[in-house]
Image (cartoon, rainbow, N blue to C red; front, side, top):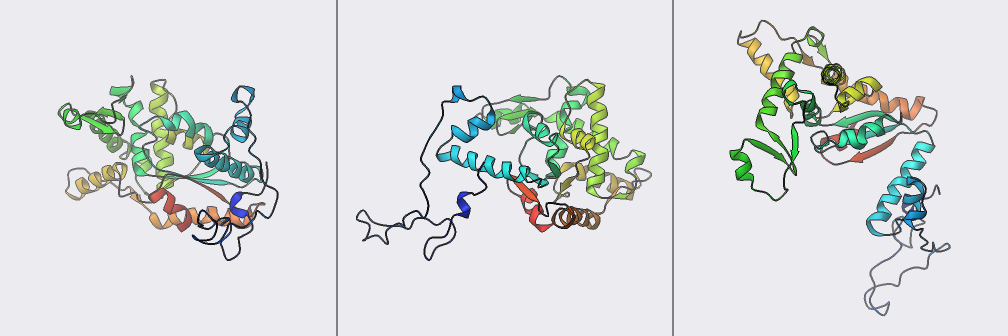
Length: 304
């Protein structure tokens, strides 16, 4: 593929890179200046029939000439260049990817390629990752619902809706009991980074998945692949809220002890160490970042 992208075009006179056209009227004068002539040869629109393509690469490169398809083609070409150059990828993922099963459809296969240095996501993604391996819901806790359905009726049925996915309210109660039990295990009774906690939790999830002969989940995959999982706002999620509950119970004398504690300073320092390695110690001297969704996972990448 070409190593030059549209954003690297030479700037128009007085414009920013890639600013090829200004506003102009029907006659090219009344509404503003005429558009500058392209400095190089024009790229003709040439496409191939989809049934003549033998690979996904051929499909993306030859069958998506315009509009949303062209954006997808551009993203694919940039990723292809970054991976081809050997740039380690940091990936930010937001949204209900584990509720919807997208982690098993495309995210885990992507992580298994070996291109990803670390993952930045939300506490909720890690929390919902455990639903499918709960003892009471191994037949499948998540079902489809109409996106424009009756939320009042779902509420009466004790059903939680996430866009067009849904699960019984009791799934959350079972997940909380499971997490509270996991966080009381001996290996969690110390001060640690969130990446270590999620590594250990991935091992716990993996035990459940193997016990019930289920497909591997996100944290289990990251545990097996040794991919660190960062969460920029751990307090805003139910994994940490279960720890908070245990901390409060220990303070009130309701349980004997709870020594788990997140070391946020060490976690941020760890993320900075990956960036230092990528920019200075890695032979390519570069990192590539793939942002899938907004919010904290996206903002955590540049802040590191």
